[in-house]
Length: 124
Image (cartoon, rainbow, N blue to C red; front, top):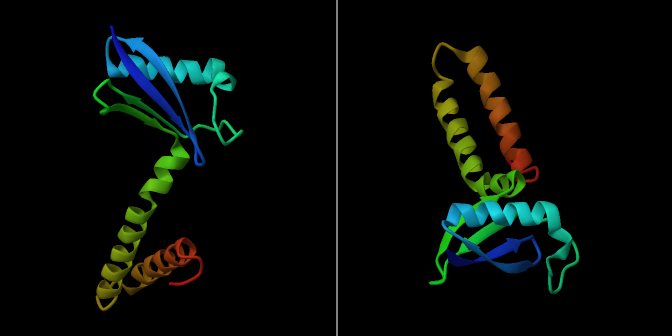
């Protein structure tokens, strides 16, 4: 068995806990179980909300060897890439607008521009 340090991260702070496990994945499974069953026992220094959005397993060398992230955090981390993709698609669709398929391409452009504006807070 190897000792792993588990970091339970929220948007504002983190708590840590050591576990003994054979593999990083086993340590991550133990950490998820600990959070689900005994999450209120985790000590967050400066933050009382315990809505953990990331659990990281770190080995004795300080290397992060396994990670779990909730859906909200994954979406927030992906948002810049998603926005870049939508912007690229909008540009491509604008170029295609000169083709004969104007009806559905114009609608796709409208939808893409609306999504970009929403993601940017109103600026297209």
